[in-house]
Image (cartoon, rainbow, N blue to C red):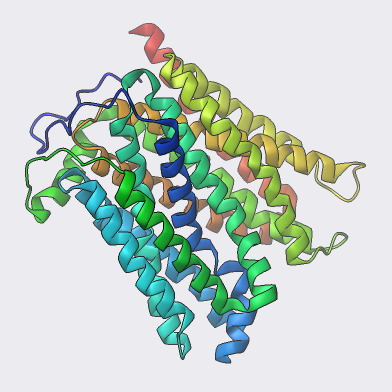
Length: 413
């Protein structure tokens, strides 16, 4: 598949969002990156705090565990219902409004007197954290064509680091000051970022106003009209499905005999994912140089090789944890590199619809992740880690197969 689809498919509302800026500074690019990382971290703070929250509100761990789902559902709703507004509204004002509301709900979470209040605040925090996915296409719009991929890669590196470090930061703050201090700290961080963004973000060019119902209908029309977007969304969904298979199955295998690691130790394996953040910027540079298709194939192959390594994770095999760590690192490079390549391509060709493109892509992406988690749990029940790794290998093989078929069509065109 090529990336040569028109900037806005025929019949869809929305025009160019203003030309890219040739002077998008390094400082502004990194401010976008830090913002995305800090905002998306709001979704993940709750995970290491579940035991403390359950004790505080005197609920069971099963009920407390639903807070993770509630926050993720909120984020999905934000992607679907709020992010498309970035195509018709001033994105600077939209980001600042989302951050302002998020500050209020973070403080509400910190002051929650009961479980249901906290759950409602968590749902709202999830919805408003979609500000990160308003910021990514905004940065892409400001970047010149020759460095858009690199810009997206840098911004997404910040987002990935936010996901990886959120659990560690939340655990450290809670250890010394309690779980409520985590949300107070997050509110302070959002306030500082809001002030910086208000002072430094450029004005967003005016675009035609579109009624909300028509805007949402155009999301589906865009998906139908743009074959490149559909293909890139499929590749992203497969990549994230494999990623979810790993992180669902990993907890099972490392908490089981003979390892029996605690949650803190299991969490340290996530540090191997820092390689993915480094890969993100490199993937963007490959896309800028016209090698997005080749990069896609290489990252898909990395996912397949990673699962081959991780299949060696067995107490009967010498050095299996070394193979597991290497596999995690390689899979993260493959998945995050694929993610940046996909987004670089779809943002390059949809100048007037980047918010809606983000909605189509990330909604499909999270559906893939949810399916991966469900399949991993089933695989573990049926055959332990061997079945989990076989599932991951099958997904990666499908991913690479899709690329091979697309490559064959390109050669035959």
